[in-house]
Image (cartoon, rainbow, N blue to C red; front, side, top):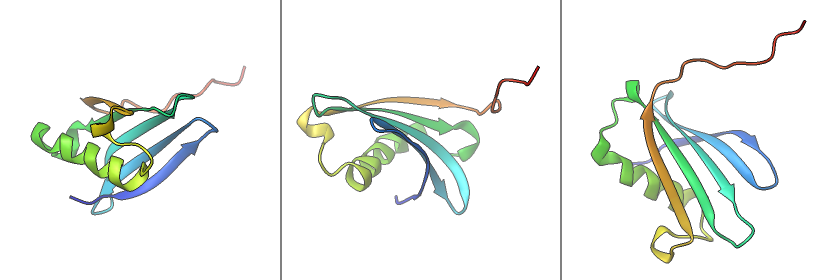
Length: 96
């Protein structure tokens, strides 16, 4: 399955993207580019997305093939942690 990708944040060594389907956020992906050429990813699938646990490996493969041509899960230089959860909110420090 294909998803639309929206980059939310990028630093020199990491980035966060949101995966969307039919205009709806279904997952967030944090990617950390390590100095040894390895990429560590965290995939958070939103509970309300309706995405089954069985579909999660396909989501990781989509991210691998679409965003990370230089690394592959099969080559042991890309690792994912997958989580299913819900967004509680965004928190920022309050001004005093």
